[in-house]
Amino acid sequence: MIDGRLRVPESVKRGEPFEVRLLIQHPMENGFRHEADGRAVPVHIVNKVACRYGGREVFTVDLGTGISANPYLVFFVRAAESAQLQVEWIDDTGATGSASATVNVG
Image (tube, rainbow, N blue to C red; front, top):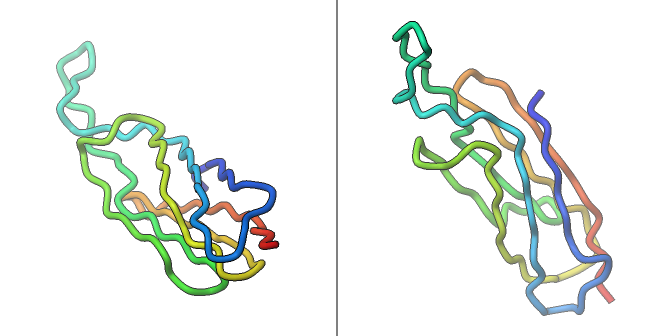
């Protein structure tokens, strides 16, 4: 299980975009580094992040080797109704993680 933190505002106005902040704790090894003994550190990256709001996919991204360790993503979603925001991610070894938050629309 890959840890992460998700932040959304406590309340948002209907129809307005709101900011979603996501921090994924992951080494994001690009495969170019070498150990002290010369062995290459293998590629190990989060390669897919998907966000659902009220059960509907609203954001998805494919990440690559150019992303730094502990990826921090910020994106906006338009507030439609009070609902659950669920974000899931998977790395190239098959390890997964998720985080969720309740969006309160007023």
